[in-house]
Every structure is written in structure tokens, then in C-alpha cells.
Image 1 (tube, one colour):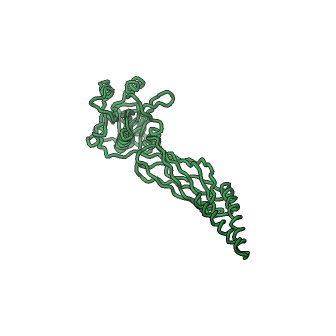
Image 2: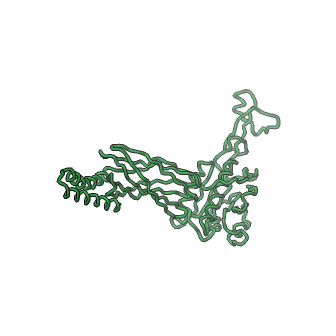
Image 3: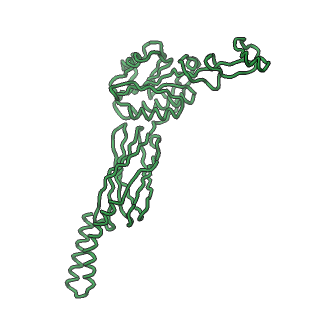
Length: 366
């Protein structure tokens, strides 16, 4: 910008010299125009600053790792003059690694018009991406002057971990485990008298204790009531948040997300558990029934989870009144050397195992 100012000053000097050397009024007119133009352009930058506004449109709320994320930037010019040159500073940060990147986006808009400019980026790591505007700079038509205006628009986008191909087999023992669930299987009958699955005609081999006598008397035909089958939620995914590098915790989140998705695919309700240091320290435990729940819980995990110095398994075990049937710890630590993982595997009535990034090609039996 200083280069442009120096060139313009040289132009004024040359015009002044010509006006002094020649008696023609034309160089004087040009000189007067060149002296008044910077004043008008200086005032124009103040006018642009007063009438410009930048907001964030409705962009993507959830994305995958390394997927292009598009955030619409709304540029409003409420003034009577077009803006041909403006720049907005956009800051992008990830809660997982804490690093911030800045981008300068060029903007322009006709008078009394709003335009939308797409801002596209991608994230290598999962986490909550925070997008914020730092300031906007407007320039005059010759780019001699500029005015900065602070803006405070913000947006967030949750970047989900990588979805790995995990082979999961849910056993009948797990599905039939009595976990006092209040939800029932819509496709299979069971033995829970609290809920009737369906009423059907009598078939050879049916127990007389299952006869629905009121319906039998009404239809004058033997009718049988089938009891419902509670959906077990006795599987827990326990996160080990001890790590040294971003790549290690990324692998933990990848495994957690992928295992949870595989369990949902197998229609197996489960719980995701981790230790949160917010509010003095407490366990976060969330029931997951489907993919919508995974997105919500993973978003909460990526926001609240912080690095810990211990596994916190003993603390969780003592805080839970009834044990789960199956507990899977996801960790990036060395399972052969870590004493806390060894204590996790000790017998206490719950089937337990540890899942690491090296075991993703093996069948996981629940």
C-alpha cells in the first residue's frame, strides 16, 4: 500500500511540474483533481467501514476427517457505493490439537447488495472446529487507504473420526443379559411379562400359561400372548484418555467411533464411558441406540474429554452399582507393559477386553 502512495505522490509532483512549466489550464485541472481525489477516497473508506457487515451462513454442522467443509460467508454492503476490494480474516482452530490457522478471504459486493462467498477447508484430525472472524479490511478504489472493522461472527463444525471396518459379532449371551432395559425388541419375542410382544393363534407346543383368556373368549378361538424381549444395554466402551501425541488420541477416537457404529449396525445398545475433568472430575456415561446418538455423544466427547494421567477404571467400578455384561477398553497404551490395563483385565464378574489399533483386523466377540 505504501508503494501505491509513493507512486501517487510522484504522479502529483509530475503534474505540478507540468502545470508550472506550461501556461495551459489543463495541467492545473488535473492537479486539482489529483489533490482532491485522495480526500474523497479517504472519506469513502470511512463510509464503507460504517456500512459493511459480515455474517456466517448455515454451513455443515458435521463432517468427516479430511472431508472438505464449506462455510458460507455472507458479505453485506449497505452503502450506496460498490465495494471492489475488501478482505476478511478467518481463524480456524481445532479443540483436539489447539492449533489455529488464519485465512484472508477477498470480498466484493455491489451497492445495496449481499453476496455469499464459500469458505472451504478440511481437517486432518477429528474434533470440534471453531470458525471465527477476526476483522474485515475495506480499501478504496485505488487501494491507497484502508479501514479495519472488528467482527465477532462464529460457527462450529464437528469433525468425526475415521470410520474403520471392524468385524463385530454379538453373542446371544450378551443380547439376553438381564440389564433392566425399558426398551423391547420389535422383531423378536422374549420372556419378559412386563410387555406383550404380540397375540396370535394357538400352535401345537404352546404353553397353556401363555393363553390370552380374554381374547380367546372374545374370538371363540384359542389365542396365545407372546412376551417381549428387552433390548440389552449391557455393553460398555471405556475410553483410556492417556496419550502423548495427537495421533495416539486420534486412533482412540477412531476405534471408539468405529466400534460404536459396528454395534449399532448389529442392533446392540451400548454405553460410552469416559472420565471428564470438567466440574472437578466426573464420569460421562451415555447410552447409544443408533447412529444419531453416536453423533451427539461423539460431539460431547470431543468437547469435554481431556488428557488424563490414569485409567480411572477402579473409580468407575466403585461408582457403578450393577456391573455390565461386557466392557471393552479402548487404549493406545502398551497392553503388555501397562499395569493399569492389567488391573482392568482382572476378574470381577464382567467380561473385559482391550482394543488397540493393532487389533482392528481381528473378530471382536461381544
